[in-house]
Image (tube, rainbow, N blue to C red; front, top):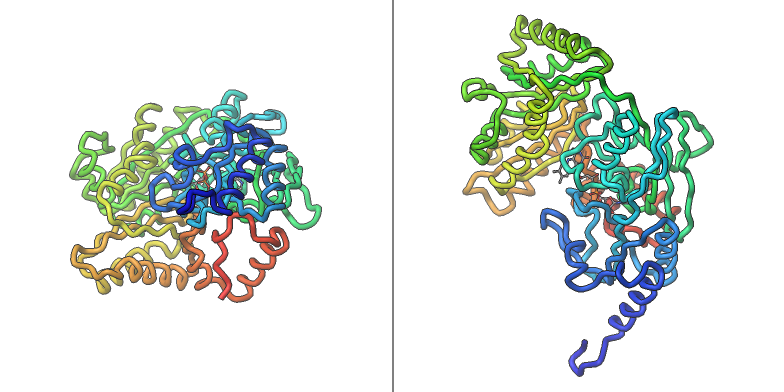
Length: 484
Ligand SMILES: Cc1cc2nc3c(=O)[nH]c(=O)nc-3n(C[C@H](O)[C@H](O)[C@H](O)COP(=O)(O)OP(=O)(O)OC[C@H]3O[C@@H](n4cnc5c(N)ncnc54)[C@H](O)[C@@H]3O)c2cc1C
């Protein structure tokens, strides 16, 4: 309301739009005020925005109608899945002009085709539910992330999510066979093909995957399934150096082949942080072994028997101990112990870092052959920049992906965060790495994109955006930097 108590022009327009949205999805699924508030902030409370309404369509047809309505009125749309993203991609800006389109009601498994090893699901399906549906059909859907209990398949594809099984099965893009997408004008592209070979022109599927909601809205996907492993074995291993961990990764690839499904690197300080902040948590081994500078959580799984898998794992570990590559290793005796080890990686590390607070985090990737030298060089450079800074690295070593966290010293200057990020990203890019490995760009890193992409690459990216979303209504302000 304005000062004399009359509704403003903007409020009248907003009310009209909300009413029109309600005729499409039903009034219960157009949220405003405090009902909308949880969807206008990301799950960590790092990004806050505003919106005309949060709308929850119940079908692809309703998504298309909502998008067409918004396109007619030039209203921007922010697609949102489980809202677990780490770059603010699903949070609208503060203008209050956008509609936040939440896909949670598109949560049906449409088809399981066990013979074709594929499953077709709607975009709002929670990842853990898709894993369960595949398991019920005697198959494996291998995408696995710490947020799998709340992130959605649409969000996984929109961010090309990685996780802990990429080493063996690839990231979300590698797991997608086909997509259904609502375009920015409200048309429905049915690309739900369950094909492994399909060279029929430019690959629209791969274009939408990883586009973070800036080119269209993914409403369903056909995904690849795999045989359920007959046996899974998890080991926790202490290394004398990062170079030894990298060397063991090569040995494990040679020794296990495709059965090597996970290789998660954890630094000694990260393990200490967990012990300090969660003293009741079950840690893999005692304080003496924990003093090792590096550790890894390694998983092998496949069609071999449990007994044979254990024998192979023990043999590869014993050979590495003989080479002094490994200081100490434990193998989970049963599935429950393995779950405890994985909880450390999936949940406890993140919680410990949150409790410690103040961390400057980087989601980076490098050629695996450069990782050990990079870790040593960058830590030395950080100490020169800010003596006393503490680093907490961990990550998916099998994919060359590190989560590199730095806590500046207490007396650090106000611009310490920016200086740390510049140092780390410059070093990563110099080494041929990426400043955005698996979490995407969102609203966090468009300026890094502007800094590190070549002018040609930026021009091509902008040309794609302009071709597919000429009015710039899909998730504005995300991924691409504003034009100078
Ligand atoms: C504890 C924890 C662990 C994590 N671990 C990993 C990890 O190992 N690997 C990893 O890659 N990420 C990880 N993440 C980040 C996050 O979970 C993933 O990016 C996930 O894929 C996001 O899914 P979501 O449904 O929550 O998407 P949201 O957060 O809702 O959205 C993310 C982006 O996708 C867009 N989007 C969402 N749905 C659609 C759709 N249907 N169509 C078009 N665009 C859409 C949004 O606009 C936004 O830009 C983790 C997060 C947490 C909290």
